[in-house]
Image 1: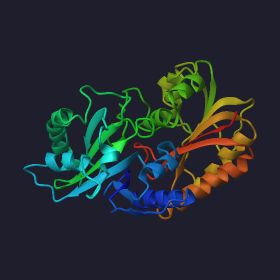
Image 2: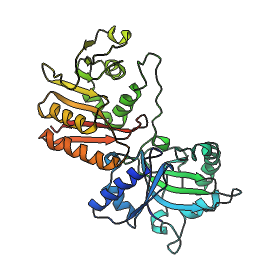
Image 3: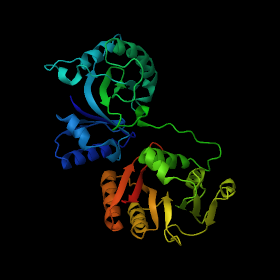
Length: 361
């Protein structure tokens, strides 16, 4: 089997499968998604995996934490020797299952990641993954398939255990996949963070912006608004980057956030407040109907009240992919100007997605 292997939040496999199917069809590719609810991954089978991978860049996917090119799926692995079938899969001949010799011969990987799905069934496999990686790494190096030292310029080799006797072998393009194991950036909640929601904005800045954008868009002295700010988690993140923040909420903010001297707390309704002058940023984590949020965010961009925005869309329990597309289309239409839009279901999100939007220069 060839195609794509994508990781996601457990329970959101149908949304990822629907997204991959829709985006593949729009790009002119035929295939089918295979998954089980709660598994934490989706396989999209396709006979043109490399072309499909180029057509569906990782940064353009909403529900995929990770996007890999599937090389082989191995079932019925013998616990006494799981290594030999993986090496054999990487050397599979054109008559066998998996890539042809022309696809794999001479391919050198820069790093090996042995993983498991982030699911109830997958988490008990973490010990196996760790031990197996230590055993597989020297074998691959001896076979000339893995660089002697980790090399970030080469593709990554991923082995993902769905069960003790069931594994996927996949390749990750370093420029078109998540750099973190399982596609999850491990962030630490600092003791003075006003709430765990701070991690959502930290992750959004890390995953939805590239290095250059973070440098350009987060400079000391810039001005921002935080709609629905209480108790101040997102305001706190912006202040740590040196931004001056108007925190809009009828509820209280933590005192140590106010004590920074960079925060003006305005007791007002975030859905009706507008800034007296254009701002560099507006962020919003209000609990509200997603379409209403998308419309309000579009107003901010259309009127030029902010240059960039990051906001959350709280999704319904059903037809979440349909609602996602509707809200993103609504944002683009009502902004009435060309936008850069990136959306992702973050690790620290729950029944929601996080969106970055900015007017194109």
